[in-house]
Length: 142
Image (tube, rainbow, N blue to C red; front, top):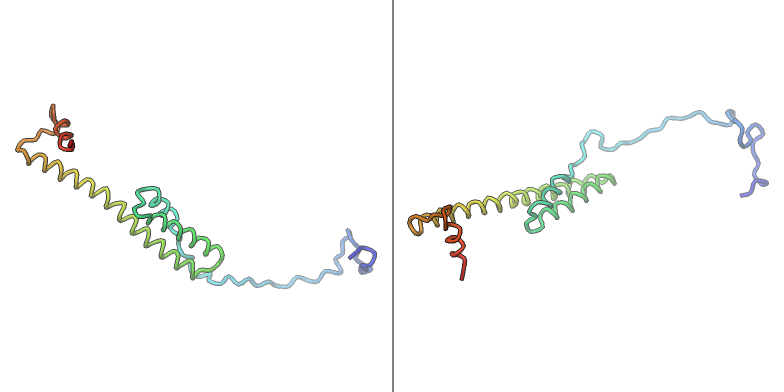
């Protein structure tokens, strides 16, 4: 539309103060939806920790994916899908944290059992003595 064909009201022209043509402001209602409910958690920090630590069977990575998806759905306002992704992220984090604690504990138990076995297998095995390390390495030589 060009400027020549547009007709302005007589009391209101462009670049002038036109208060008489303004209508009084009405009320605006904003529906907040679930204002009483707290949004679901996304467990993003926990997922990052599980991903960067042992990450056995990629459980931490799966938790990270669902955490990001839960955060995206929460941002979009789809709280039902965000809650589902949050629950999956939580359970993957629980499984990953369980494995992350279990693997080092198993390694420590196996090391202790190995040392106990080496101490009792030949009677008096001096692991920390002069030739202890060499005797220990001889166990693994072919």
